[in-house]
Image 1 (tube, rainbow over the protein chains, first blue to last red):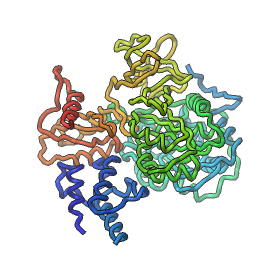
Image 2 (image 1 turned 180 degrees about the horizontal axis):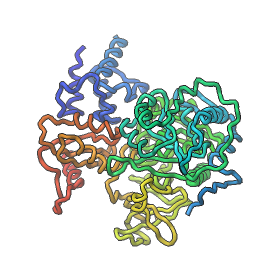
Image 3 (image 1 turned 90 degrees about the vertical axis):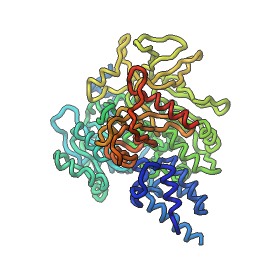
Image 4 (image 1 turned 30 degrees about the vertical axis):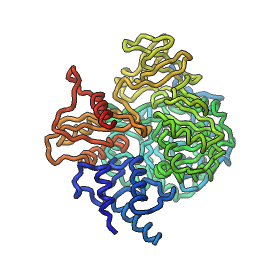
Length: 83
Length: 511
């Protein structure tokens, strides 16, 4: 699965001036303030549309979206579970 | 003037005695943790005694404190009671704050000890070692047998009970000194106004390092009500909060509006009829969130509460379900409050009008640790000391008070008070920054923090700035948007760097 669109979304929505190579999979998006609580909701709306997922109320937890790596894992596990 | 060294309410010698006596009346009242575990008041007291037995004995200094930097658990609450029972003041520190910020506070505080848990122990160990301050690890105490020996109870509580820290205009947070009398006067009002009883259950959402927690802890324990302790992870999770409300049968909610927004988004079609009081404070409540909350909590009264760390709560507004005003007024003063509106020269404004709100109340802080700061915010009028709130308010024809704006650079972001000067200061300390000015814009989603940064460094981007700010500022004080530019900070006609000019430019660009 390609996560390019996820990276583009984060770059365009939250980090326009940050060079792509600095958005590493481990970078903590919450603690750096790149994504705030409202940003998490935008991100979730994007994930549901882009990857055809349903995020349950239990998963509306900012801690699950701390880094690009973590978000990619979440998408992969949800897609695998749905298949 | 408050009485000193003479806490005497119904024959008790200290605030801690009074708490213990009230808690002894309801030994079986329940305290719910974020993990679902429940303990009783009696078990909390037992844990508190065990923790107390590990705290250092009284020292030589006149007013001692013990800092508490730990996750919001039963043991952390027990530690607060334990510190109070030694006659000392407790200084709760937010474990989610940057370590450099915590150690700046601790350097200034010189606590007799710091109560930690396994995760904060690792962060504070180098500081404790360098300063020779004992660390008391709650996670190690938890493995011990409960303390069976009866400990001597300190009969006199020192004046000070709690020390809170709030954003200052430079990198150093201001320490606010709060006396036992102030906490006691406050809990008395809460219990009266809400008619808090043993069949209530209060949701404690705010971290213990915030003044909001005084209501949660002291009004609950003094009235025998149940209590739910939401830790920092739970506090951010709307679905988990909904579950806790239903599991524990929460009847009183207390938080900043941002947490209620989270809850409204996660609740779906749920209706929670047990809730009878929803209290919110700290920032404006969006009207559309309020409408959703009316539906989720059909039996609750809604109170918009106004206050600050220095005075605790001073105004409140009972929100009507029909014809709800937007924005909500601050409302009317609490019974224990005296206030006046002052113009720019400090002259009192009578009747309808706009001015800075000055308040005087028994819940007021003794002062900041820095007496110069205290002098700057206190005004004396007719034998009373008033705290100059820095809030510009309007009194309407009915005598109801409305919020207008600030007279200084302090803003509320997600319920957290942030001085924009502190953000500027932190930005300017980055070697690549020539000049910086932070400013807020108001959107339908609430208050947004932005920053203009002038830099001649080609490589500098917002990530560098974020990583730099993270070292000293709490997350809410990190701007959402950065503009990094070669151009200098915009100035007004007097040549002064102008936040309003930036905000106006930003807001008109968004339209």
